Length: 221
Ligand code: AMP
Image 1 (cartoon, helix red, strand yellow):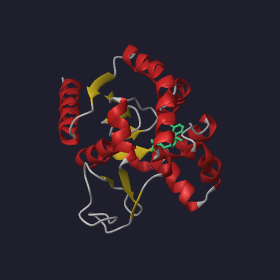
Image 2 (cartoon, rainbow, N blue to C red):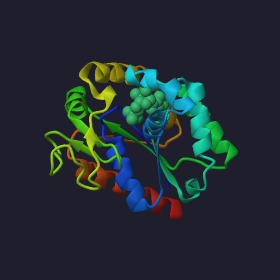
Image 3 (cartoon, rainbow, N blue to C red):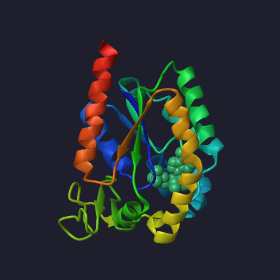
């Protein structure tokens, strides 16, 4: 199964993608995670991307294309993937199509997780991330058992520098400027499925799983 997850920052793409990748045994490709890893390791890409990320802006397309193309050259892609955080604009959608063409791949479904601004700001401003395993928590919605410590691996939790209210607003503005062209692009290809993601993450996950099953059955016919 090859899935693209679209949606505003804070719609729960990362949370859903991790769970889906585990249950479907496919690769999870999060462009935000790859970039953050590069920033952490101080690579050339990380150094080039850091400032854009801290300001809530998109990292330039040329850097993203190279990064994505490298990621799609890895063997684990063959078992299927869930792409989270890419494409973020129309040019990236075209780049992705080119990468797929070169590798004889196609996307099965594009799930658009929609969320309201109020929910997004509440979720992101309270989000905590594990510095070791990347698991997400929330100060009030999903607090860790021990303050500042990851339930899963005991790593320390931190707040992302781009999860400050001002930066969240900037990220939302950037997102809204670009998303309609992406929605139209995938709608025209009959690949788009829209879900409201304001509610409980477990319910949203069940809805996505139901969609994948329906699609899987229809592909078998
Ligand atoms: P995310 O974890 O998906 O919210 O991404 C965090 C930040 O990484 C974004 O605010 C951007 O600065 C950068 N980023 C992630 N994916 C992309 C992308 N496809 N294109 C450009 N910048 C990206």
